[in-house]
Length: 591
Ligand code: SF4
Image (tube, rainbow, N blue to C red; front, side, top):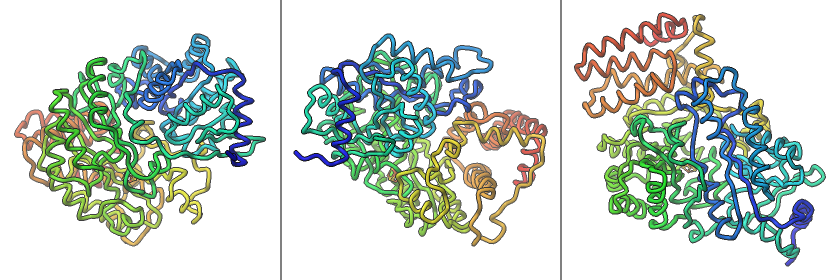
């Protein structure tokens, strides 16, 4: 077999870096946000992600099957556990994690270290873990993989200061087995796939193999000794905590990989390849049953990006949950595709324990939807809203996005109008944050809207909900009466700038999430559901925000609980009177 020039170079580097046979692999799962954003108050309210490391569990299962020994050190879990159990004053996450990293390496004595990273927000930590690991033993090769390193392999390698030796891109469980087989057999005529590295400081990217076939997906993750049943007590697993209750134990499962669509802002195709590959229903159900029996799990969040890809399979999967008496609830926080929604599908979802479902809407403008290649159009969204509203036991949320290139205020207004017409229970609105390796990122770089290298850590858009940035804005403006304008009263042809988008976000949030609570007639079942959610926003998600309490008053009034309503109005008023920020906003909103 003739190797490409890149693979010849990569093979040589692998042989240099792996002088010994490999038997033991230690994996690190990094904290989910940068160290400087950790906040004891947010942690105590369970506001940070605390997902079981599903991908690492799958890697461990494959490695075990092939005779390797692995260990997982979940640093995200360690941080959240410590923040919740101890009264930290100044908590320095790096100082806290260093001895844990060092001890794990010394105790396990790995031949290779693997660092995974799902979120760009973990970027600084993967660099830190690699640095600390090399300080312990510089001869242990370090691999990084997962969604973030796959999206920006060159940047991760370069910013790691040569501490990360190789990146394994995309779905890499089989590529990792190949790499270790290559190392242990020294077969020079064969080349492992999906490896990127620096050679003489130049980025070299090896060949990529097709993603794992459907048969190889039928494997249960092996979480070793991780206390999976404890994860959701420390942080968020999915977006429907308020529906499943504080006592529930949530985990995740992945029934199929990939997505049929190719939205220009999404990195799923870059990581999973084209199309969708599904596991057998038995394999998925066996895995959930294992989590129920071994860890006491009673709620599953699907990690799927296209859960309804094959409607018949999805219905059979949900029916099997009922038939096998798993007695779980589940949610689709990752979102489903609106055009795939049918009555039969949502009926089977509700019957099998679905309590929450996100729908990827993004925009109400047909031009924007076409330009970003959404797989659904306005008519699909309206139809999906009609179907979902027949199932009040499911809390429904829509993902909306603003800030697309050239998007006008008029187009954003179309998004507001569509959201109100769909009448889902809630919408999460985010500003476009272009990810490297996506088409929209390339377009924006080409058109000079952003600089290439936006994921340089100083420029990363970390989002406001996890880091508490929105809270910081509110805190900094508590005593300052900032101007707030309703831009939709002006020229709708205007393309808003970043400053205007802050006010627009607030305005949209109010118009589509709060105002309908006042203006629309709602069944008691829906009002009770909204009460649970508003309580979660007021008590856990935000701090010192009068809006959820004001609208709890509205909801209680509609439920004829007038005394409780008055208590909530009083609480909202008390918070508002202590904040110039909220006074000015309530004034503009006429509250
Ligand atoms: S439908 Fe969702 S998962 Fe699929 S490409 Fe679009 S944004 Fe990504």
